[in-house]
Length: 199
Length: 199
DNA sequence: GTCTATATTTTGATAGAC
DNA sequence: GTCTATCAAAATATAGAC
Image (cartoon, rainbow over all chains, first blue to last red; front, side, top):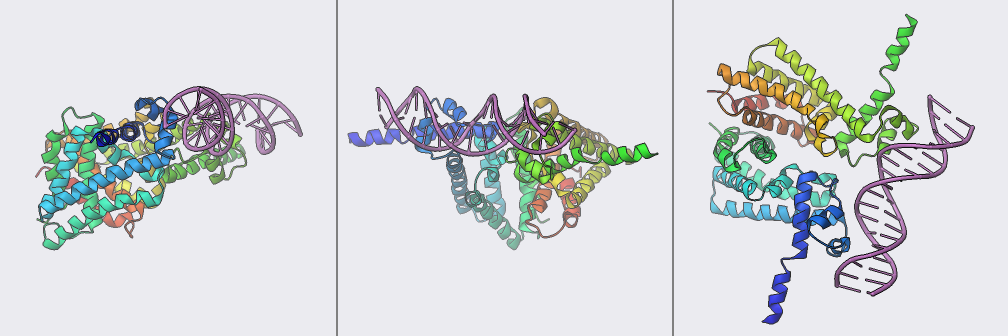
């Protein structure tokens, strides 16, 4: 009873604080402009050694971060897919998720949309992006089969659809628009969906 | 007569070779993964000093490169604007330019679309991007006024339109599609134009 | 004026003391 | 086991010799 209270509490701490700080800095300044010293300071740590205790190298820190974010995205998408069989509604669910995330955790979306992982992570781990991408491609593929989505190469449909969505989110994140992402969501959805819908 | 032949010839040399090599490497590996040594080798130079002779710092090299590319884009857009008054045709001209460039000089487009200048250039020079962007925003603005383009925030129209175009070009540049950019051009144009046209 | 050699700085990573 | 101190490497920039 007393053992567990301690272990439960420590399970939220240092490692996550470091990852959070790194996420914020990578999203803001990029991987190469962020030193371990910066992360140490942002995380409120007293020494670099603490970081090296949890992560062997800077790369492996970035890798953990990337895996976490990607994995959490993947789980959310699986959730969405379970809720409805229609491609349009699944895509709509993903768009909702991204817009909500942009308002609630902008650094996460900034990290997803603007950090170029392949510039500092080896191919194998960068390939995880493919996991999420493949799931979305599958949604599109099914939509084409059922006739909801027009017959074009799924990759092109992906590019069109998320070209609109991602650019809208980047615009919000840049601060060029004065309102929350939520405000632009339904128009962006309609516009994106229109690029691929079969009419 | 004999003076000029020499000056004409030397005007194509070292500086341009260096810039070309840098463009290629920045586009391929990114600014931070490219060392001056890499550029030296790619340019076939014998010493680093040659680079330092032409450019004070690595940053200023990147800056020159960026200014060159941006300036050349700006000129092309001015050209296009002079040829026709219709927003749709001006945008079409820009799309044609980008797709042609993607086939003829992929590294230039890669540089434009994927290199994040603000990560290594000071704001003042990074602001040049605004010049090109502002010209395009003006085209959109005019299109809204004449009723060609639907009434939405010009920035949003920009985001929608180039979301489709840029993502299509990135897809081609990634090698994920097997054909030349040209093949995907007219469909991409139609799709992009449809995101902003007034119906 | 061109190359060799070196200085300087930054930062990631380690080793050793308390 | 946590921090101080140091090491090592890389890469930008400079200085000096021929």
